[in-house]
Amino acid sequence: MTDKHGVWLVAPQKIPFNTPLMLQNGQQLPRFDLMIETYGTLNADKSNAVLICHALSGNHHVAGRHAAGDKYPGWWDNMVGPGKPIDTDRFFVVGLNNLGGCHGSTGPLSINPESGEDYGADFPVVTVKDWVKSQAMLADYLGITQWAAVVGGSLGGMQALQWAIDYPERVRHALVIASSPKLSTQNIAFNDVARQAILTDPDFHGGHYARHHTLPKRGLKIARMMGHITYLAEDGLGKKFGRELHSDGFQYGYDVEFEVESYLRYQGDKFAGQFDANTYLLMTKALDYFDPAAEYGNNLQAALAHTRAGFFVASFSSDWRFSPERSHELVKALIAAQKPVQYIEVESHHGHDAFLMEDAPYTRAVRAYMHNVYQERQA
Image (cartoon, rainbow, N blue to C red):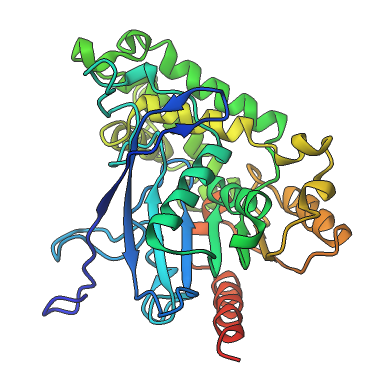
């Protein structure tokens, strides 16, 4: 709905699941909650539902604002909303915070029913397959037997791909954006360095920092600073900051001297103040473990053989964290498996973060694809 000033207001919902969830690692969650937001109206035959899967630091708040005075809208507000590429005048859109998250879904900050204390480090490691299984339970709860589309960028794109593989009859289209069928060795290495920054923070306390009334902010800040660099492109970062100094002349010390240092420290501090360190560890591990072809003899074509979805795959020229070559690998496997796929490679200077931006060719491509998704049910 909109308020009197035309601000699109949305509200989160916490959905309880009292059925145990068996995880890929053999552990079991006795119960769990998923925090979600929905946008638009579910049609009579429930055929217009779209699931938005978030990336590492994302959450359920995809679009709109919770209150008129909120400074920032949801993280994909440029993509989801009335008249936007994923048009909520046409689709019923669901955003959620994944298991292990720190924005309302059951995770390390939640109370462990077995101990009566917060889970902390005792929260089990979850995988993309686990997330998709819990999302299928959410779809059942909502009465949605088939998604018109499952959409995601980066880690969200991995979930869209896993959906198409694990529940082929429940996905009509999968939009896999700035993603990969598995992480490169370099990406796994980056993730480990980020985790080590957190794990070696003196305030980490083996992941039970809440019980010690501390937060490993220094480690999380460093992890985010390093990660943030990898999400950007050298060209874009150079154009934005260059070698511009933060103050006049060199200070010949180790405090902030360049504007890029100031920017990164600000981003690190901001992130450390609003994200949970244990959640960061869980999300990066889910990235590392993702490899759906492993169950099919490391043959990606075989993993895709029984999918029924149409695929939209997008990559960005300056994305060196999830490079276009990773999308090429997926597209080639889809073609070899004789699956319908549309691919766009966008010239961009935004790096990996381009999937969150408003590059016109990218936005037009998503809009056109989603228009066809809508039209196929109107025929």
